[in-house]
Image (cartoon, rainbow, N blue to C red; front, side, top):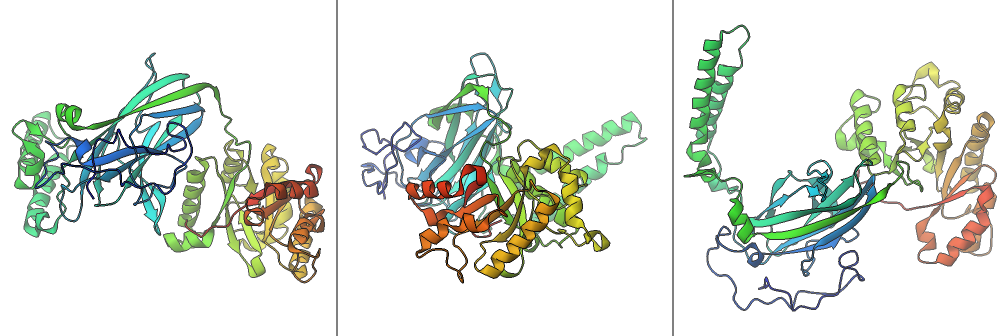
Length: 509
């Protein structure tokens, strides 16, 4: 397919979040036609990047897959409060191939700080980050960090690559208009072909040279200054010999290193994207107004990371997941399934009297935390009266209002509902103000609550009272029927509990 860099005359429906308007479906790039396609060997250092790649912007709500078709390039305009993160995507699709080894070519992506007219900055690598969108099972999902402020990305023929741009506005950031830009330049791909890789002898020679440098400068304690100077001079000579070797010939010209493109070449050949951010003069609270919780199977973590339940490495893996999710204002909990969908849920793997638990639960970004019904890690004699001891400790804390117990995942019959009730009764005996969360999508199958499924579904809250305080109903039961939401809320009644929607996903963590 031959595409043109000049797409000014093409009528493309606007994308929601970019220049206003709705979301377009079914659009293709049949209107892109280049009457003068590039032929023969292409040197990206001599050809405008706009003739080699399509570049356009997409909102963060879009799934930009490999077959996403090009759109007109427009400046990025974002709005954010202080203590808020805003994101946008930059899509890149090659028009022709100028690389080798099965690649269309490579592009260098640079970004600047976002600056205000008063000199305030949102710094690249701190407030401004770039990640590459990587598909998982064919779906755009993983966000892989890119080097900052300059990164190189290899492009595949006929495929669109997306870059996820995030701007984190600190709470103390002065309000105002901030401006910056992205510079995208087609460049020569890294030499990764087998025939261009280093041979064993060459690798060994490089290793010996670098090892010699280290031996020269490492043992310096107690050495006289004259000897240190001579050592540094000798190491400098060895390093220069390594850098001037044929292995690094591609990175040197007569005027020095060329690993970063010449600024004049960038100015003349590059594609520039303006980014404008308006920072509003108010601060979003650290604690989300609507709690969003996500459950992670601890057995999946154990399998994926090869850690043993209860080991130091296990605690470290859970701590890593907790902190990673919390930065996105998502309140995580870990879970382990038992028989008949009984589930052990906990936000902190440590007991309530451990400093880490208080650190977790006191974090203002955490909107809710799950309290385990029994010990997460077997503790022998300490298991006696475990629940009462945990509740007694937590009830003295100011963060107790965030606590909830999640005991059973979607009970299906009277036996399971009865077991759930008995567990809730024990909890409320120790803490009458404790909140028990129950997820459900139907009533007990062996004791229908009504003549049809939805009527039976509506009566589940009454069946669960007074043992459940948070009614967590499946989103798929409601679908797009907003009127059903009103019926559910009317049945629950605000004074009798809370209602939360949930979805089930695969174990991707």
